[in-house]
Length: 400
Image (tube, rainbow, N blue to C red; front, side, top):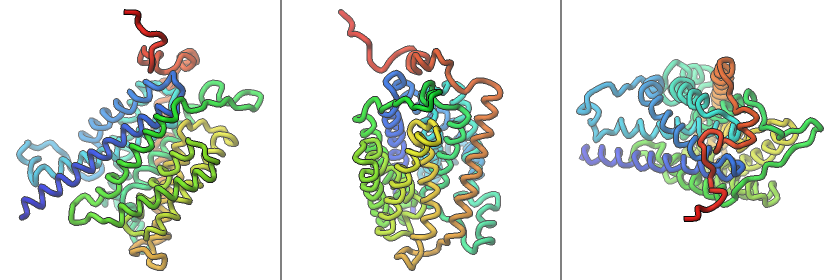
């Protein structure tokens, strides 16, 4: 019976890993649809190669930093319990690799390829695992500090803060250090519009992300006996709440419409296992509003050229989700309890500070040594031709 349970657990978390791996295709298509045509190939290649670099960094360094587990044993030892620990690594790797995928959307169209891959290695190998280990691995005394200070440990079931807020705030640091795209903000105070190159691809990316997100959230149980339908329905309610509010506030703009469900899903991750579905609906709706309002302010008033809006979508909606868990997870609002507002606020604040400081350190160090961005000529030509020597579609068909 134990053998069946072990095999079932390994299969369960493997399916989750595959679903979250598919989300990286969603990241790629979401970025492809948002950037201008001359940068589409770069979006596709960057997400794929970032994932490959993340795998190496997390396997050899990051997973050990986070959980104190290494894989420098014989295959016989690694295959124990149907290789569950290896599959668990695969699952958590897909979370770790989401960090550079998130950052990629903010720095699109003007970042150099090599320096970004180096940043990916450092972030996934060191910066992210240190916070991941502190919250999910119970290491470094952080959870003990939060619990002794507030009376209850910080709760983040599926990564509103650990993954999304951390990725979003690292992304903000990168965007600020990189600067806006050429001619995005003119000297006369005006702003050049850069509309999405393909709404269908943007929509495809959002749909792939939304479907994969149910693996991201539900499979965070990590074993079959801990699976909860509450997590699935809460994710669904937050998704539709974010969608409806974003459509209404965004005046039917398709960019807002398709980022609305993602905002809701980002926010519900932390408390998806403790909230009532009605609470999850509210959390998602607020997240949709946060994205529309803050994306508009970021681009138009503050002139921060965050191409895909990764800071409002992941950084701010993730932070809201961490705090909202402490509100809507309370038994008084129909939740399961076991969470506290103060502990959620403290844990979220620690994540934001760590991520923003880490992002400034990594990208600041790279900028001090080499250039982070393409030359003006390369940026004008587009990352596709400048880096990859080929465009998304040929200018003309071959005559043979």
